[in-house]
Image: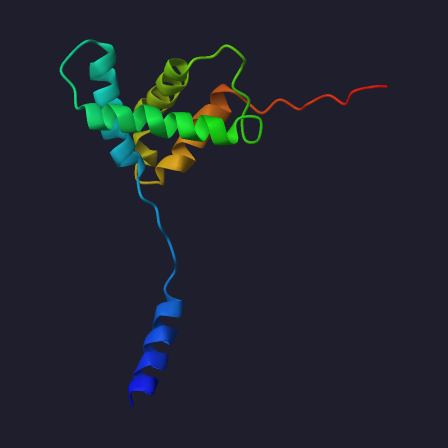
Length: 120
């Protein structure tokens, strides 16, 4: 009987869609607001501020020249501002996964540049 219950449970679990979105745009906007306070010299939540910059930095480091092309010399602060301004202009998107929104914002601001083939 225990084996049957285990099999049924495993079957039911396999029908669920696996989705592990740890942060949505709503959470990212909260962190963006703290980043803005920090930049303005106002009291801020350092956990959210650090999360925001770290999240943007991680996506920039892992995806530049793959999904978008951040120009040489651009700063993390510029990338954070680009994403934050994009979030401000697209509140209808805040329910979506945060990483999708960050990539979308950076793709719009810094489209992927095709590498030209080197000639011999």
